[in-house]
Length: 297
Image (cartoon, rainbow, N blue to C red; front, side):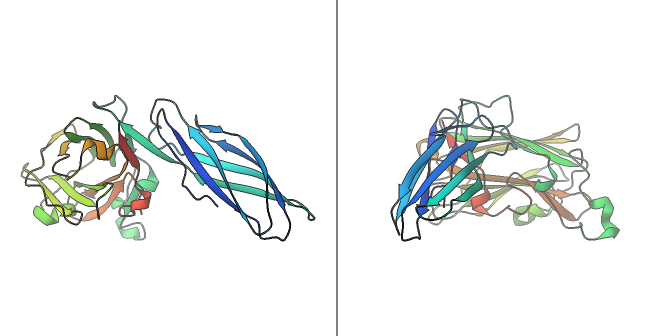
């Protein structure tokens, strides 16, 4: 079993630990090979040893990558193959593949490449999939609804730029209900805090803008003001959000330890909330374990 979920982030090495258990009354020999997808390097690539009867063996391999972040949407896997050989029995094969959690490193300024892209079917949640009368409300592709996200970590704030493509922007709701219209919902889990931040941002039909904080970690206060700007141009909505570390009751140093992030774009074309598209996937909007991991440089 993998006792530490593998991670990787630019220019760093992360150790993945595995526990092997020998249930037999005889020694078991293991010969295992490790291989990762993409440009991730694994060391050592081969491991061999013996496990005493009824005991465990803790083994590890190190994952390292180059200086660039993993590309948006890229999936990384760690594969393990080989065999276990009890002393007086036939060997049996071992094959296992587990996902590697890429951790993106945020720099002081925005990169030319987006940190995240929302344009795939598995990121889309639609409330009308099972209703043939509402085929016109189904997601038809990136030109219907999609988005790109750029993130940076300055000395004083976490900065987020979002470009949303939406064939029709509609939002007549304000305050706590702004999620019912076209809008952003942003989620953050920060180390050392009990709970998550959940907040929203919207451009309304009267072209005014508003924000709302629905959830905050225990013991934290809702920020009195979050600097943000939303503009519409050429059927695209551009969001610019600054989250001061002080408003989030954290610091750049704390965020360098790693934090979880998710963002979804709500879709409402005809006065009805049709669904959303989310970084973490259609069904993982609130599943913290599925949120992407980031860290400040």
